[in-house]
Every structure is written in C-alpha cells, then in structure tokens.
Image (cartoon, rainbow over all chains, first blue to last red; front, side, top):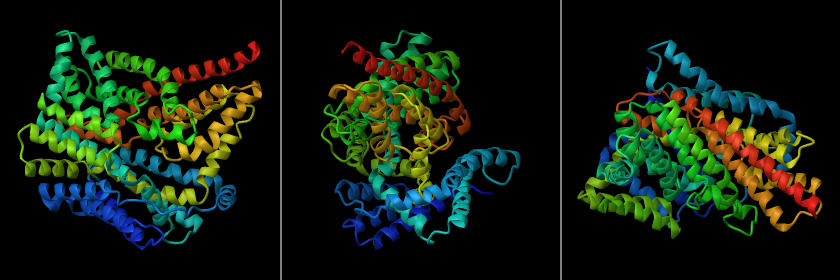
Length: 312
Length: 223
C-alpha cells in the first residue's frame, strides 16, 4: 500500500537534487549555504523518522543557523530570455496550460479513485499521494512533448526554490512553533483572556471572539498559520466544537479565512503588503494595505456570519 | 501569563526585521523556558513537531514542473490570455484579473501570477492605461491608488482562491491539527467550505473596483 512515506521519499530526492545542483552553481557566492540548507531538508524528508526527536531538533537548529546568518542566496541572472520564452509560448501555449492543469486534476481524480479501490493507497492521505502522482505524470507528459535537456526541470525548480529561499520552510516552522505553544499552554492563557471577554454561553459571542481573534492574532503574527493553532485551541475547539457542537470542518476552514482578512491589514505580512508597494514604487509604503482595508473589514464580517450560519 | 513572552518576541522580532526563522526559534525557546521546560526538552519538542509536520513543505515538489513550464513560456501565455481581454475599463480589467487569479489559485496555480511576475509588468500598467483612457488628467495620487489597487486585487484573488485547492499548505495544517484533536477530516471538506468566502470576496472587492472606476472618472467630469 502506498503511504505518505512515498511522498516524503519523492520530496527528499527532489531537495537532494536541488542541493547537488546548487553546489555546482559557481555563479552563486552562497552555494555552500544553499546546498547545506536543502541537503538538511532532504535528510529530514528521507530520514526524519530515524533521527529521533532531539536529532530532528538539532537539524532545525542547523537550518535556522544557516538561514539566520545569511548563508542563503540566489545566483544573479540565469533567466531564460523573454524573447525565447515568448517564441516558445506562441508555439506551445495551450499545451503548457494543459500540463499545468494535470497536477490538480490528478490530485482530484486520485482522491476519489483511491477511496473507491481500497488497499491501493492510504485513504487518509489520498490527496497528497495523488498530488505526488500528478507531479510525476505532468513531468512525464511535459518532457515527452517539449523534449528539454534532461536536468532542465530540476535546474529551473531549484532556481525557483532559491528565489523563495528560507521562506520555503516558514509555514512548517510556524506549525512547529504552534506545537511548542500548545505544550506550554499559550492557547489556554490567550483563551482564558479571550474567554473572560466572552459572555458565558453566548454562541454568537464565541463565534465573534473566534473570528475577530483570528484576524487580530494574524495581524500580530503576520501569518494566519501561526494564529490558527492558538485560536483553535483557545476558542474553536473548547467552545465552538465541544460546547456548542459546531462542525469542525466549517469552523477550521472559515476561521482560517477570517485570519486571511487580518493578513490583508498588517505590515507583518511583508511579502504581500510591503514588497509590492516597493515594487510598484508607491510613495506610501502602506498604500497597498490602505487599498485592502475596505475589502478586509466587510469580508471579515461575512466570515463571522458564515461560521455562525453554516457550522451550527 | 509568562508564556506569552513568546508572542512578544514574535512581535518585536518582526518589527525589528530580524530573520523570521531566528525569531521563531527564539520565541519557541523563551516560551518553553517560561513554561518550565529545559532546553533539551524544548529542542526535542520542536524537532518532533517539525518531523510530524513535514507534509506542510512537500508542496515544493511541484517546482520542477512549474520551472519546466515557465521556461517554455507559461507566464507569457497566461499574460497573452489577459491581454486578449480587449475593451477593458479599469473596473472590468481588475475584476477580470481578480476572477482569473481566484480561479487559478483554486486549481493550485498560485505562482503563475504574483506581484513580481504579473502585477508590476502587466496588471498595474494595464490598469493605469485603462484609467487614463477615461481620464486624461490623472493626478499622481490617483495613479498611486490605481497601482495600489492592482496589488491589492492580486492579494485578494490569491488569498480567497487558494484555499479551494485541496493540497495547499493551510488546508494541510488544518487537517494535521484536527487529526490531533481526533477529528479525521478529508481536505475536500475544507476546500468546499472555502467557496462561500471566495464568492463574498469577489462580490465585495468587485464592488469596490467599480467604485474605484467611478471615482476616477467622476473627478474628471468635475475638473
């Protein structure tokens, strides 16, 4: 039976290839840092289960040390000229779009297929396993028609990942921080503070606190991923799901989107709000946030209303 | 109350522009110490959580495919699709982009467009041109607003489209956390419940884009 382990091996091999190719890129002055960073991530994917908890912790400390001391960078240039891309786009246009659509299509079809035929793949991980197959199929189809140099997909993939840099593991790091927060009881403390603000037994008060809390805490943390575990532990689970019997899928899904409304209003989400202001050479660095507040506030109200109506 | 020090460190660290990975690690250590854990236990707890949440980072296996397609002009093709929408006013242009961005994010194509790839070279200039077509005396402040709305539209489209895709990071995070509470929920359920908000986002932001267009044209009539 195919399990998530298969996807981890695929990811580990991909990161290992990025590390090896990065090491050979002499145009990048930080190639050793990059190779070490992606190499450690490959080790985590391939051997994380054998390293032990403390070993994995040391691996994370090494990743943080490499990124935190500025040892990661991307090689300048190396882009495929726009004219070449434009000529190719005119030739292959819709085929490219088709190949891009293979990945989500296979992920969707595989999810249903693996449920219908039990024993093929771990049904709990059907989507992720299907996604990995989608990647392999899309790659095979693309390679067959486009006939690029054999290493081109890995080289281009590596360049894309290098441009994302250490931010590539930011969501995983924030999820892990959430686990430490949970261990230390941060959610209970925040929940206690918010709990004192909620009128006892008021369902609407609890939904309001959850939605507003997600948005405000996201603004503070700059990322809904970090706010979500805390608000879920503080209000979502104990009050909305356990006490009032709300649907956990609705509470989680729309609660996360309430957090995204917070992302639109905070300079902490620099890559979405401050970077474009600089890219567009706006005089006001908060110009993008200003343009977004008018959408974020009514949408937050809509999300709170949706949780109240759909979850109960 | 002392465990809230981790949150204070996150806020201060981001405000002072330290590397976020360093800030997260410092926050985890301080929070653990405040809760009475020793350093080795905190490192082990973080390591265990990092290993258990590896699925959050597996999304990067799509990069070789995206890299291949972009080398053969996927971005140019996507741009030419937008280019072909002729006769677009400012409101229609940005609303069209909003819809396209939401639709693409919903099928997982989050990095086909973006501030560097599409907004600066394409959407903002097109939006400016569309505004100028109706108002030949566009002020600097109006120009700024049109550009800012171009970037804002990209963010709104991305944020409220991507959660419809089954395998996006936030959905995997929700699944992982709810698993921990004993609720086994398929990613598809989260995806479906992202749809009402996606529709609301399109309506709210779309109305604001219409008002933006009116504002840009009305000031010309008064001039």
